[in-house]
Length: 170
Image (cartoon, rainbow, N blue to C red; front, side, top):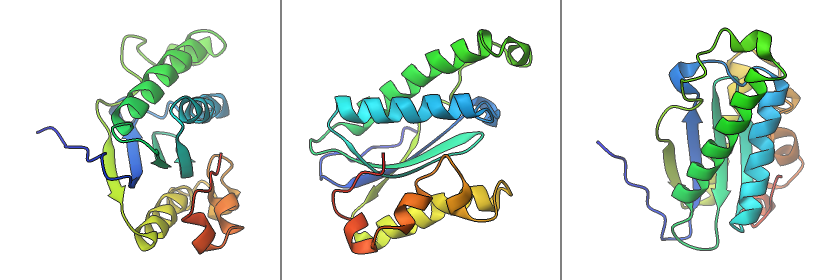
């Protein structure tokens, strides 16, 4: 069953997608930086805004908003395609010793993604808290603000009422 994406109402979107077979392809900081760099550049290309993000070893969360309708699917498609190419190049080149443990013909990402429309400040804060707690729950850090590949530290310095406004974290 194909999940329907509702992208005509101007809502923010909580997006999640995972590495193929939940492999930990994002364990390396270089791979996480690729995901963040492409997130930032794709947002610029599509005039999008990021309210929060977390890059985990095997999946990604982000809250994004676009001023125009029908942008989310294109955004995620481009984000995943561009990162796939660069992550495969990373593991095939600079980190060739690690490439042996991965089949280069396998995709980097699972097909599809999860999209949840955020239509209230309360739901935005709930989703940000959920995703920022991921590294703590996974035992990677003691405090969410300690995870380098997350917007948690930034979001802690902004009052919730300002965070819900057009405020980018990237």
